[in-house]
Image (tube, rainbow, N blue to C red):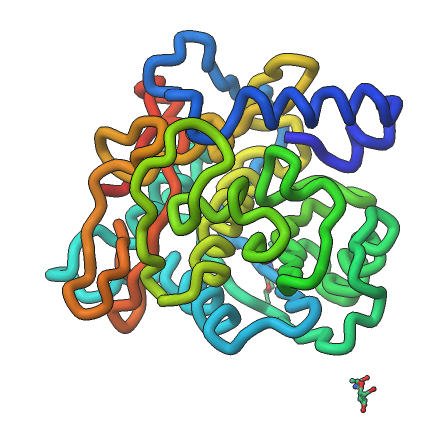
Length: 306
Ligand SMILES: *[C@@H]1O[C@H](CO)[C@@H](O)[C@H](O)[C@H]1NC(C)=O
Ligand SMILES: *[C@@H]1O[C@H](CO)[C@@H](O)[C@H](O)[C@H]1NC(C)=O
């Protein structure tokens, strides 16, 4: 998708037009499964393998459930949950890892995390502010990848307009940034936990953590990580779409979570009998998550963990 490098090298108007097109063409409408136009290619650039050191910045007043859910998701990437509970977050991650030549399973480690509860740079995250956060997050940690998580009252430039997470490169540091779409753009970024702004209404699912923001953020973070691993420097696995939009593994299959997904239908997922929450993967301590589909270049279809 868009990134700082592109943004800085394209006139703003072009970027604005392309963002508009993303809004028009993406999100549940497109059934990538039958889209013959999708053909992501490995452009030969660097991919991240073996180890992924993350520096996580919780920016603003995030809820306890939100931080807990995101941390549990990250922990689950390399750790199996109870096997009898169904498909695993770790299987989802191994599939992402398998796209990186020579990487069997990328080990994810949170090497630093901190909470910026006082909104030290204000509540509107422009690119200049993102740059400051990115550089602070990895100070003294060469090779670490900043993951910036904005609270619900933080507006992140570039998010909501057709994309729910962003990754880019700032001074050769690949980073991921996500927000909490609950107040700002739930219809764009909180489906299937919230009615979608696009396409048929369809059924709304209960979030597995009980918190719409937390689970929408897991979907965004999962997408962001898949993209940053396979296309960290924007020279890896992607396809240029209309108006030079970058289509990546995680953006090629919007709105799909289970087998049979279609516009307005998330696909076949499991339901927790205790909470009514919908999920497709379990992680550490049996925690349940709903993880997004991504493009499988080997089969040219969208892949879901369940
Ligand atoms: C955050 O702001 C509050 C109230 O203004 C202040 O008491 C507190 O020390 C600040 N915390 C940090 C870490 O700056
Ligand atoms: C990750 O962090 C460890 C220390 O925790 C360090 O030894 C290693 O070199 C780092 N790897 C990368 C790729 O940044």
